[in-house]
Amino acid sequence: MARPKATPEQRAEVRRSIKRAAAELYREEGLGAVSARAVAKKAGVSVGTIYSYFGDLAGLGQSLWEGRVARQEEVFRETAAQHEDPITQIKALLDAYLTFGIEQHELYRSVLLFVRPAAMGEPVRQEVRTFAFPTLLNAAIERGQAAGQVREGDAGELTQLLWSGVHGAIALPINLARVELKSVEELKTVTIDRLLSMLNP
Image (cartoon, rainbow, N blue to C red):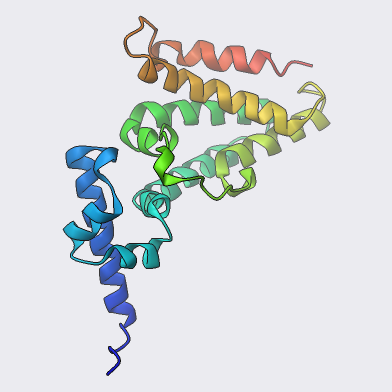
């Protein structure tokens, strides 16, 4: 006899229990402990159930941060909306990004400093425009170019260079903690100023 189909409520509870188990393993033992087998055992489900609900371990990992990432993306949108002038908007966005890395360091590390183990395979690539920060930055750069405030060139490349600059300011002191480097807090203002100077026409 076929097993009755799970209700939407039951499926939602299974999904929550898997996410809880993965989050606990991550918090208690680190990323290396978050395997399909370990999560399945802790959640009381089969390994197949994890893949059925999340596609793969990368999908499960991303699901742990969805809500907090969505809230941060809204912060970027609100920041951009507060400024009309393209240069002021770019500066505010860079500041908001660095503030995100400083004030929400756990989320930043988990989402943006994640080093994918080889066993997890390649992720599905997403377009840059699916993320608020680079999309807003790119739009401000294009408006700045149209107004003669930003140097000519590929706006997408300039966006990536600015994003790399603020990301590196956060990541380098963390990834190379054994090296005497200044913290992102110490370099925040000068990082923004130097990156903005790169945009001068």
